[in-house]
Length: 250
Ligand code: ZN
Image (cartoon, rainbow, N blue to C red; front, side, top):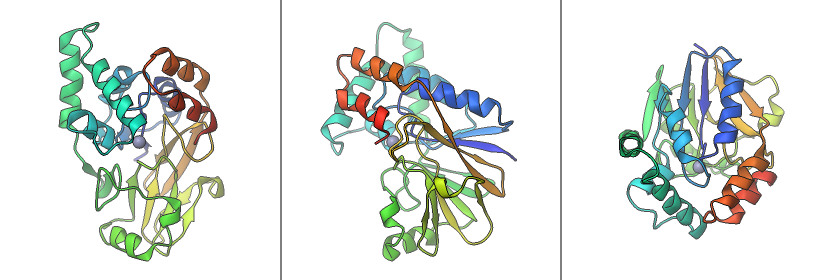
């Protein structure tokens, strides 16, 4: 079965719309979302509306922070979460709609399985909060423990906003090295699908993945990030830095 995996939309409806148009041309049967639909971006409601139609949507650390506590967030992320909470409680919208969005967030699960394959936001040993970054690829202690928790050919994650493939023998493969995708089946791998709404690998284009059982294909989609930057600034509340970083993809 052919599926699309998205993650870290972060309230960026412009990026998500562009990704959804790209997905529509890929004849996928299902869309799976690995969390962080909200936080940072200017249109959390629109993104939740879209995500609620996906086959799977996981709990990200930003949803967890919106629901429970955000004390472990840095200043900018916390300001964004508080602003996002206000948007989801806004009296400018029907109360039932607010309830529906909070209900949806409240039901999100920290992990899921799809055809036996583990899906998490962060990592198999800490599904919501642990980061796996390219520099961790050679950290045998960390990656050894993480790979011991992966029981299929692949585990999909998001959270770091840096897409790529981590192999059990300590390599990180950037999608730039994989124009034809990564063929599954020769050893376990962990795949980070990247971020739709706030890429951090130096490429401003939205990132997502097509998974067709045997192959993982990394997709990048251009979108009008200047419009999103303007929307962030026009909130008058979200930190300017959250707009600037969309341009640099950092
Ligand atoms: Zn995120």
